[in-house]
Image (cartoon, rainbow, N blue to C red; front, top):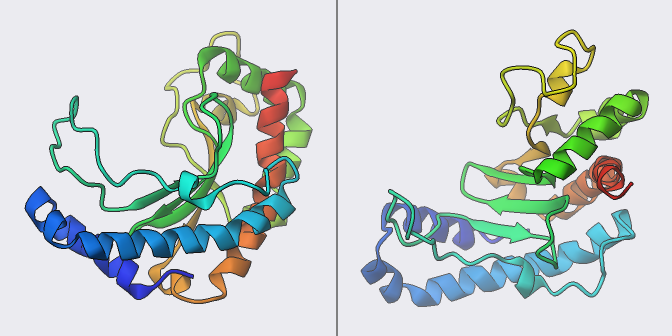
Length: 218
């Protein structure tokens, strides 16, 4: 679970997003970061148990993303993120992954492939087209459906090239990202039972992630 002080720190960052405040409260940041790392250390064996391809030796501290924002090409010049992002990915290759987002009132766990490169996106669509029944079985299974929603944030307005607009699964084929999201409340994060909830979430989304991985390697 996460300590209340960690969420309080993130709330304070959002309200005081400047270098002066952050420097004065650096000790709070270090405490919050240590809390997040400790939480991730508890989750790694749970994820490895659900997904045998995920390495048990993954280091928690390497999963926690930097809180410092890259503002070089952004209109938003706030120097710090108001969240802790945890990427359970140990390589820089473009591929499906698991991600945990900790932010007061907006926390979630997600799994899948965000904005895949063109060749991978083409392969995923082909796999869904060729093996529609398998994909539908995965996303309509109770272990998935009761927890997750497929993100429709990145979607084509028209049918992708090579597919008929009347294709029975055209809405799935129009997706530009294949992401399943599981929302988490602040109250849930503060309870020890969050570990079991995420364990269930890891297990439920594993077939979805494996389908995407299979699509880009075949």
